[in-house]
Image (cartoon, rainbow, N blue to C red):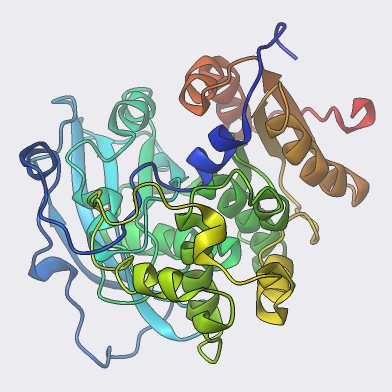
Length: 394
């Protein structure tokens, strides 16, 4: 712990797991929303069916100069082959940020693969369509320190496919495959990389470590999870304080992974009406204001077998990770307790975990105030220094 902390409500935990403005139906974007985002164009469109390709195979790329980024940070959009939650060949989009200087260091620019917090399930929720890339200033900081950043949108955000809400393993695949695609679009990228994520992306970063245990990519050096690392089931156990949209997004994620699942088995008539619009827009609508979570679900919905299976399949910390891990959390409950539960599993199976906590109640403050620890950990990985583990004290 860095210093004494303040309280943190559960809504803060869900705010970083999910988006702050959840879609509830068709709505005309406000002028401010138009100015801060780009429309979907042909770059993101994929033919149906998609011509087959290996995971990480580049479909196309383009330089893009309209992001709100420092002048010494360049951007390239990418479209590449990945795998869906059901194992099918799909297209994912993303963006590469890299230093403007023409000559990379020997061996190429070291790479940070960024796993973003959830934004919704509609196509236009893709961070690469956001003028600020959601965390543009934060990511640009790393670029100006000499790293390249590869930031996937996740399948279904940007591309015209279904998104995999809260599916850490599917999102981790998009992260991993984005690295191979990025190297094809920008050969100056080096072979060594780490994964970093926050909110929804925190679990994805941990799932990257688990996947790499079997893939044995010598260039993968470890993962950082910043705020929001938690078991999905524990998040939904607090359904009495969740926003009403939470079960709708969960149903969407389950149906993406299990097409035979029927949302009507857990959603009420009102919930089904709202569910029909969640993949249409990322703009805040008036449709769902004042609705409680209980109004959109059926009694005992959490006991549905598909729901239970989804909670199990998206859990991280059950497979060993060969590379070091850094987990950063708010100090106060429930954020620390949820992260500590996952860290306990990681430590029990022998993983090297550095678990650090900070007092801030706002996830954005945690990610900002932990920057020094992040940078030190990242630099140590690329310098081949021994990884610190404090598992014995947690």
